[in-house]
Image 1 (cartoon, one colour):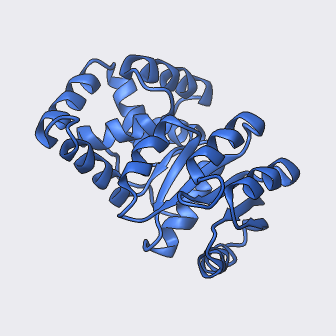
Image 2 (tube, rainbow, N blue to C red):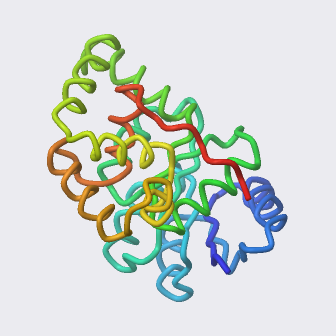
Length: 226
């Protein structure tokens, strides 16, 4: 059972997220919070597998809460709920404690997919979030869109063929175990490839690597749902 905490200052959003998660037999919502401080404390108390946090919350925003959670309870994966008006927040998040990014107006199935991916140790970027991040980076002086894509392809080209395969699957939201099964190797080999490609790409975590995968356009097709 995947234990989940929900944090959002809007009761209707919390209710909606809870209702979606309640449709899955393998997910259990164990706590809810209305601000970042309560979210951190409840994660300490309940130690859920996944914390679903609104990026903008009073007192302590989702990004800062995610960083605290990563330090205090590293076993809890964090998913950020965002809107298209929160690009600046999204851009800060891959360098913090978040492993997943979802649009509030996205499809319910995407929330379930994201929770399962992050619970399994993967990074999950909504395709709409990834596209928005890439476009926003280009629009804010971090290089033209074409230039960033070209740079990302150059960075990916420096990887080994197997590391590129792993990055493509990582960018699609697969966990190490799922990647191992897709590539017919043991999970320890995948972990070694992930560590190596993070170092080669010069990024700190899987979420940031997923952004590079999206920029380079090498996302692997999603596997069929069981």
